[in-house]
Amino acid sequence: MHINPKIFDKDVEQAPIRKGFGDGLLKAAEIDGRIVGLCADLTDSTHMNTFKQKFPERFVEMGVAEQNLVSVASGMAAMGKIPFVSSYAVFSPGRNWEQIRTTVCYNNVPVKIAGSHAGVSVGPDGGSHQALEDIAITRVLPRMAVISPCDAIEARKATIAAAKTDSPTYIRLAREKTPIITVDASPFEIGKAYTLFRADHSGQKVKADEGHRSVAIIATGSLVYRAMLAGKKLIHEGYEVEVINLHTIKPIDEKAIVAAARKYKAIVTVEEHQIIGGMGSAVAEVLARNYPVPIEFVGVQDMFGQSGTPDELIVHYGMDEKSIYNAARRVMLRR
Amino acid sequence: MALTQEKISFLKDKAALIRASIIESLIEAKSGHTAGPLDMSDIFTYMYFHALKHDPKKSLWPYRDRLVLSNGHIAPVLYATLAHAGYFPISTLAHLRKFGSPLQGHPHREWLKCLETSSGPLGSGLSQTVGMAIADRIDNGRSSGKQFYCLMSDGELDAGNSWEGAMLAGKEKLQNLTAIIDRNNIQIDGFTEDIMPLNPLAEKWRSWNWHVQEIDGHNFEDIDRAIGEAHAVFDRPSVIIAYTIPSKGIPAFERKFEWHGKPPMTDDEIRVAREALGIR
Image (cartoon, rainbow over all chains, first blue to last red; front, side, top):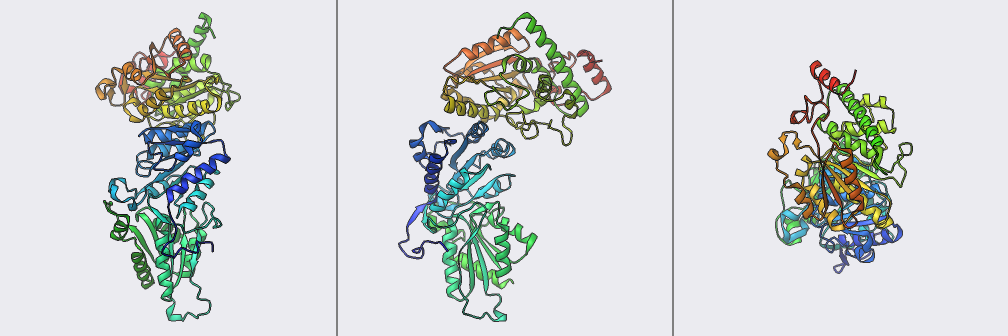
């Protein structure tokens, strides 16, 4: 499995996921001249600035006008461009949801929406700027692909991959630095979940009455690292655990989710998003149809965020490694 | 291309046929909008039979001018004009708003492939046209032969998205862009100046650095002069505020906002409409 060998070191390298978007956009634009960039007055913050510097003639500054941002992008796509639009997720896909629905998805044009500053880890800006509903409102749209990369490397790969598809695509980005989990050689394919690690208990025999000592943790985006920490602790305590990175929420990898449910019989989902309508809901939809097992949902429990440090907020809203660990213990008892 | 008296009388005849087709398709559909399609018939006729560089037999010809209808609810005039221009058989108009029909209640580019975009929700058509014009300028510079037209309503100027598009077009000095506003002074709930006053409308556009003209939207010479002037302006986008009479062509329905969103339904209404438009 391709993960950063230093992932559990104290001094693990960290980078903001949004930076990976900037790197990926630059790379994609060097390869494909059809790519254009549009930004709503947040060019540095969303890391579109490197693209703007290299390709000024392919960049449009929109001002604080997110409805215009996507509808202009739709028009450019109609002329054969592949527009990337960036803003904070609260505003895009938040404020401009109807324009995304009608002019991008209903119209079926390949506009790529990068929403930065998703999750409570935005921190001191407070609840108004912490997008916690963006996965729900994008994944409900027909034709829309929804990707939530777990680190800056994966965000780079996701951006390059998104540039190559004909689909409207939402890429969810986080503001804060988070550990680099993957490596350049890690697999990335839109729609394909992958295992970050699983407990190797091959030498041990699991007794029949210990059948409930297994769980799969399915995580996405900025909380994948914390899910790995929780998984590591559970493995250390002898549980059979697999940690899965579900970077694409739509199209969802039904096969991987059902296989995990069959093998581990209990699931924890982990996302920095409302538990209503988010990635966990998407997983539950898959399992309700195919292979129902107990699920615990780690995420924001139907409330808004507030100011604080990212760590304070992640703990307060029950999304830290301890909360994930506890959710895993709970779900195993429910079997 | 010069607009001769002969051409004007050709356009008048075409517009009359298009109005008749609109009403017949609405009667058949039993729902849809009457006032806007009728009042924009002259402008649509002018655009498709005189102004546009296009090829009905090759609708996706890449060098065509682009015409975006922003207020999608006046689809009946778009459909009737496209049919009379030869994009699809006139008999298709009988399927307006019917299940499985390419003529969806509001235009959709996948159901009807010759459309530039899908519209209905108001206020975003101008922005899309702005995007098209910018994309063309990136590829072909300021001397591209293509013109970009957005046909929009006055009522939809209540929507902030319209003004976001207007600001950007002014900033980008999109000389290849012309917006035509159907200034019929009505919207669903009443007269525009009662619902949400737009006046002084011309000054609003001027202040966003647009070239502004105000014309009689039923006078072909006026329309022709305005489009010619719009093409000649090279340092900014153009808007043509076309004053029109809602439900133009059926005197009994004219100027009444009640006809914004319904078709002739009763036997009496159908008879009045057909008589006025000379439909036997």
